[in-house]
Image (cartoon, rainbow, N blue to C red; front, side):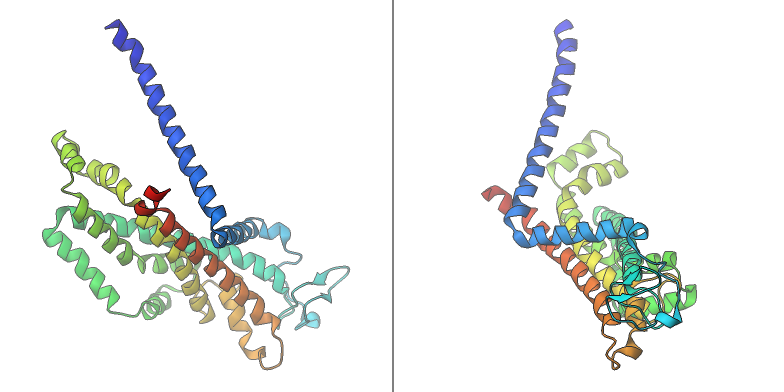
Length: 311
């Protein structure tokens, strides 16, 4: 008995060290894979820059993004502003600094993108796990609800709900998040159907584990790889949807700068050669969405078990 009590902490410590060592190896392999894939490294650098801009935007912006100065309206990039300040990316039709509004808009785009994916992913994962594990009428109810939602164009549903609920950041996140749940539900359901008869799931049932424990501690960790890949792609699509809704005037309130609203405000000035009002927010959307798509492609290859075996 003395030997058993002495060895137990050592065994636990060895298992803990083994887990840490495995995580270190996986992290090192991920870094090496990203460096080898130059596009993935470029995408990550873009996301890091956009994230830093979103976090430190209020300290980086030279002007208040909502400060109007009609005397300084429609100035081209590099024009001098009040005092010793400069409109590095020009000013808009109300004399607001384009650079400052661009920096603040990054925060809204990333917040909406990640929060909507969190809402939609949570709903979809729960629905998919329950649907795939229990089957029967529960499966039919969730899948038919998904079919009904997919029968309507998403942008029309989003416009309808935002017209009823009104513009606002929270409403935008809820609408975009609810629009994403079907994708996650179908993927999780398919994976759960394949895993629910596996030996380790049967062993969990035999040892008396409760259903929530089986779903979230036994099945869910084994299907995180495809969910991570889908989430990375969906962040890009949500950012595009947010820009489209803001372009239509159905996003956040007008006093909140967003890249979509900046594009909308530039429509009336494109023919008058005020190109900077549309080009800079457009490029911000393009590069951010492109970065998420590149990272999604890299994650799909990195998390593929067949490719893991070759390394």
